[in-house]
Image (cartoon, rainbow, N blue to C red):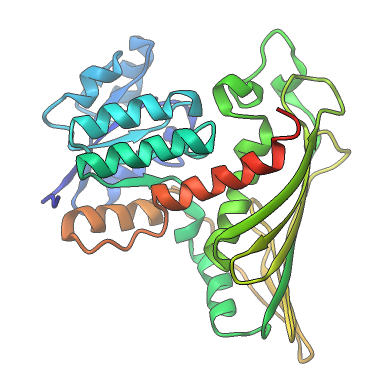
Length: 328
């Protein structure tokens, strides 16, 4: 399947599409945003007007079956990702689906199978794989700047705040039936996917998940250990009811270490016997844009090089599922 131009339709034009993703579809060569959908029609109409999108819908089926739409971006909560992906695949339209890719690994595999059967591409929105900041980390690893990689540690914790403290108005991100789990699924998925990108697939996982603060039903703390296919070891701690916000990943090798954050914009740090070097990067205005550029290139040239596919996205779902299965 090869397009002269990718004409996108968005299902679920909520907050994530306002700046992070939506405008990118209009700014990339051979790409345009032609339709948006939201269940509340007035909100879809308002989004279309503000972003100069020609069409809006309040029904996903109508957008999927619009003949002018030839690719679909699914930006709804994970609970509906499988349904909309399968419908788009049956309509022979490639899919770009928000992360986490689905609520669990089984749903991911159904999505992959549907797209393979229909002969369409499936991409997962782990956009950090294409950002200059994380490509620098990969370059350092590929150039053996720290020698042989031995292990990686990730520590990410934050304060409980905002609507997660309101039991009458809980966000979908802490409702397992919609999200697959709690904030671990929403946030730690970025880190675990990055580790897959940087160090290769994780093939063995052990984890413990609990709910310590009782603000909601989902897990609020997860601790895990894992081994990569290459033999590298890893350990991670995620807590969403701590006293401050911390976000640090450290990849340790035989000759040095690389330190970086997943969500912050601190410099990438390389520490070796020779001292410390660091690199700073400007955050993209539209954080999805570098990844979407690779998707558009895939679909218009047929030379598939996008680093974030349904297959890689499903691996992250499997790892998360293994880490929380004691809780669920």
